[in-house]
Every structure is written in C-alpha cells, then in structure tokens.
Amino acid sequence: MNLYAIVLSAIVVTLLTVSLTRLGKVKTKADYLVAGRSLPAFVLVFTLLSSWIGSGSLLGGAENAYRHGFAALWQGGGGWAGLLLIYFIAPRARKFAQFTIPDLLEVRYNQAARILGVIAILFCYTAVTSYQFVGGGDILHLIFPDVITPDFGKYIIAAFVIVFTAIAGMASVAYMDVAIGLLATFTMIIALPILTHHAGGWSAIHASLPATHFEVFGDLSHIRCLELFLPTCLLLLGNQSMYQKFFSAKSEKDATRAVVGWIIGTVILETVIVALAVTGSSLFPSGEVEARPREILAYLGLHGFSGSGPLRLLGALLMGAIFAKIISTANNWLFSPSTNLVNDIYLRYINPEASNKKTLAVSRLMVVLLGLWALYQSLHIESVLKKSLYAYTIYGAALTPVILATFYWRRATAAGAVASIAVGTFVTVFWDTGLVHSHLPAIIGERDAILPALLASLLCLVIVSLLTTPPTEKQLKPFSEA
Image (cartoon, rainbow, N blue to C red; front, top):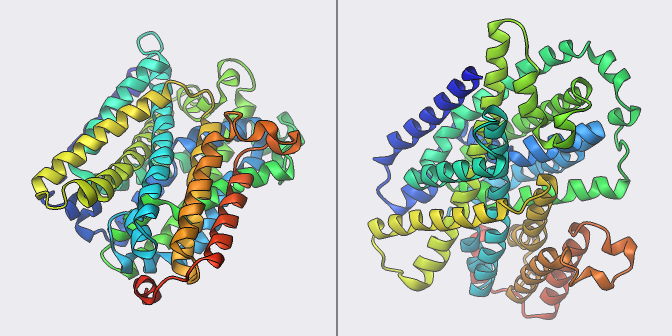
C-alpha cells in the first residue's frame, strides 16, 4: 500500500511544481485566461485530451462498460463524431480569438445571450467538476480505507484542485496536462494486455460474460444508446473549455493539428477504458466492486496486478494515472467557468477598467467560490454516469445549437438564440424534478432529458429566428470572415 501512496505523492508534488514554475509568467488577463495565446499543437493535444477524458469516462463510462459491455462505447462514440466536426470548426474559433463562449454569443447575438450562456455554463461545468471530486475521493478511500472515507476524500481533492487551479491559470493547466496525458495513455495501453492475460485471455473473458457484452447495442435499447451518444456529441461540439484552448493556440494551424491528435488519442483511450472495464467485470464479477462498479479501473490498479515488483508498480501507476486524469479534468472544468464570471460579468458590467492585478485576484476568488459550489454538489451524487449525462445535456441542448449557428447559419437571430438557450436550460434542469415531465405520458417522461431538451431548443432557435428580424452585416462580419 505504501507504493500507491508514494506514486500519488509524487504526482501531487509534480503537479504543484509545474504550476508554481508557471506562476511567475502570469502577468496579464490573457496570460491567465488563454496562456498568452502561445500554446503549440503538441501541448494542445494533451490538454484537450486530459480535459475531455476524466471521471465521465473513467468512472461513468467504466461503470456502464462493467454492467453492459462494449455498448458503453456509444457514449464515447458521440465524442468521436463531435471531434470529426470540430476539425472544421477549430480554425474558425482560433481566428475569432476571444476569451470565452459568451464573448462569441454577444458579438453574434446580444448581451442577453451572453448572460444566459454564462448561467448554462455554470450549471454544466460545476456539475462536471463535482463528480471529479467524487472520483478522486473514491481513489483516496481505496488506497487509505481505514483513514479516508469517500466523503472526506472529496474534501481533500476539492481543496487541492481549488488551490492548484487558482495558482497560474490556463498555462499551468495546459502544461500539466502534457505529463498527465502521456502517463495515462501509456499506462492504460500497457495494463490492458497484462490484465487480459491474467483473466485467461480474450476467449476466457468472452466465455465468462454475457454475449450481449460484445454486441453493438448489447442489452441496451436503441433509444438508450442514442441518449448516451447525443449528450456527449453535443457537449463536445460546443464545449467552452475546448474553444478556450483553441483561443489559446499559437495559430489556426496549431488548432487544426491539435484536433487530429485529439481524435486519435480519444478513440484509443476511450476504447481501452471500456476494454479494461469489461476485463475487470470478468476478473471481479462480484464483491465490493460489484456494488460500486464506477471504481472498477481503480480497483484493477489496486487488486489486478500481483507477482513481481514491476507488476505492482504498474498497478500503482495505473491508479496514479486515473487519479491524475481526474485532477486534470477537475482543474479544466473548474477553471473555465471562473473565466466566465470574470470576463463576462465582472469586467463586462462591474469593473471594466480593472487592472491586471485586480483581475487576477478576482479570477482566483471565483475559482474558490465555484470550487466550493462543486464540492457541495459532489456530496449529493449517487451516480456519476447520471450526473455526467445531466451536465452534458445542459450544455448540449442549451448552447451547442446556438454556437454552431454562429458559424454556420446566417439567419439565426438574437431572439432565437436567447429563446433556445433559456428553454434548453430550463427543460434539462427541471426535467428530473417532476415539474416538467410528470404530466407527460410515461413513454416520454421516463426518458433522459436530452431528446426533449434538444428538440425544444432547436425549435425555439429556428422558429423564433425565422419570425424575427435577420441579423445585421455587422453582427455577421466577424464570422463570415472566419
């Protein structure tokens, strides 16, 4: 057990070192929010990869794979489809080169769209951050079961993430992601064949599990697969954290190259994660992990490797890689909404003439406040998978349609965008409370929010836009030139 503590300690020290070395280079708002627009393609690949693959994949996706097999890849597949489309969006986003998605919404639409965009982002991003705290707390509990409870672990992870994220901003997060991305990628790829061998080979795994674990749809309905696919795809297409990294790129060419590496890395890693979870369901079909299947990857790191010192070290590194990915994702998703409160509210409406020093101080304060809100949410999470789909749906239904319309539909109007964001957010947030769907037929009311929320959002965007005055050439010019 000391080996696992040593590996985690080394990771924590490394992350703090990277952050502190970047601290002296943060002098302006651009340095803090978009790394001075200086990130090369290599760094962008790993910061995009690390911010995308966190607890949603490592806990929620792995839990789904443990229970249902390779059909869990429908969730990852939504991201892959989104990535193919992002290849064409990335250079346009970099040419626009602002700080946040609400910047884009105000330029293309109006101030109301900016404010509603901030609200939707805060709901989504703090929800995503909250289940990273859950994942980190689970890992600390597995390593120190007699000392740290899962809830106490959440407090520890939250404190570390809040402090780390507040220190040096985007540059710190991005360069840390390079080390984490390399560690996670190679550790998981090496671990898979070893664990498969321990399980008796792929034929033995296949024989020990239901045949549905290896089918395209598995034991999931077609509509359920669509409910896994759509939120992930739509979140990725409009993800502010992603656009913010494109805004941080050295050039449009660097942004485009980074997407190619991101696509390759995401397909490989998410497939490996699902394969590891399926292997884990064969190795550990019952016991502690059956009751908490979201912990299967960490459980494999702790109990799946036996024998020589190198194997035990690999298990510790796998556990450390999962822990580091969770920390990295929490940093990314906590940092992004803090930039909204600073850039889109504080500097836009409260203190437009704030100095760089004051802006940095307020930015760090926002990180702390949002981190505490995410911690509060984490204390009430029962299912990481359900929470992740909720967060993805808020963003995918409320913001992605109007963001894509910004670049690709000249007829979209400010009124249409405002209606779309407001209705998409409302339907998603209140769908599971009984306020919206309790009066609907069961065949609709029992479904996840993504389909009704997306349909309502799209209808509002299209119908209201067609019924209102078209946008001016001034509004369209920054995007038609992109």
